[in-house]
Length: 605
Image (cartoon, rainbow, N blue to C red; front, top):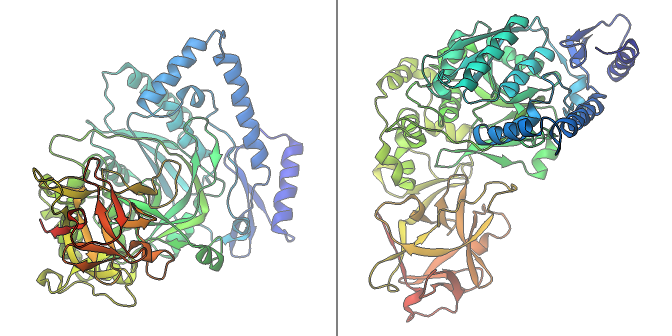
């Protein structure tokens, strides 16, 4: 517990920050050491920035390092135990379990909210909150630290429960038996925590449905089982939902290191998708950041799936998650479309921050199921008029089918005029989405059209495989991404540029699909994370993220037909040429109508 002197100093800091007026009252929220002070203000309560949190966080990390030195260094009595914990943690959970097990369940986290957040008065909450944590193959200490951070930093009057959902962890595993015993012991000491168990492993999506349906709070907050909530995390989420019950409120996500459990500040970005329907982030421009208040909510078209708060009634109204979405993947897309198209909105709330361990994940699907099958289900129900664009860009997805979606289609039909179509979503929520259309195609009659308000809706001149016409007599060569994915934003492991080359053509392949756009003149591939374009760099040709109209460097991605089969590069005034030997790299050379190596054609599959 804080000493009387520390509490007094803390009170001085808080009250100085808030410029407390006479008669203002303050209440200590959560744990006596790791909680915070909430003070009354005109119209509600303010949660001051916890100035001393940084020092307390550093102190806890130093304590961890000292304990690791004493218990895990070479020659220590528990060196072998530490090594086994680390190896087991990395193999099973993809983080260092030896460190998690030596870090207290209650620990300080740095308060990284924008300073202005400490001056906002949130109305007295009328709703209660259920926090749902689904766990499967999770470390016990990371799971319980997630729960403990909620207990430590959430007003008791708002917190209905922390609901742990055991997604059928195997009972023939000794580690699971021990984990469940530890959880039951923890629950015995924390009456607001309870657990339900699924009879078999259903996957994250079905388990979230079960948790949301079993929750007793007015608002359901989902988070992954390896998180730590920040100071004042819940008040802004609840305030956003109480202002508009159809709002889905998403916290700004900070990163907790999988190796050292250190904190790094998350960046405010916009959640979007490409036609792969995979979620990705889009950075805000300096101009967009300068124009906005740091505390203002940010509307996003597509939400990340792991951390968000939603009114339980609204969750039920839109039909929960589709139980046909198996294990993992596509549920955030389904939720995003259902929310926006059925009268709701999705906002990132910068004054709510939650730390999350970003780690490598892999999921085992039942036979006949995959992420693509999940996405196909969403497309068939919520994007039916546009599904040909998705299937044309990702022909491999078709083989997975989509199963029976009659229940989901019937629910959407039942909602009737309360739900709009995907054209409305593009026009009003995601107007900068890339939409490649074939001109005069009857399937596109009812779809959005190119225009000033939809800058990335464009007709294409030709699409399909780009084939080198006369290079390899025994088999055709196709423009191929070589299974490289260009990153949507700069990241540590992301690929921003990759040499362009041709490979043997395959009958059906997602990585050999290209569009030659009419207005922008770009040759575009729709990747998992973003659209990337054939780009001239000197005499080389590479794949890079597509430039937008008006953006510097667009000429480097513009191509036209100089003569039949010859692709002319506007920026260099040279032509596309492929090497005659493997690895069949592409380059820019002086144009020649007689060179076989400069002849290409599109073939529609």
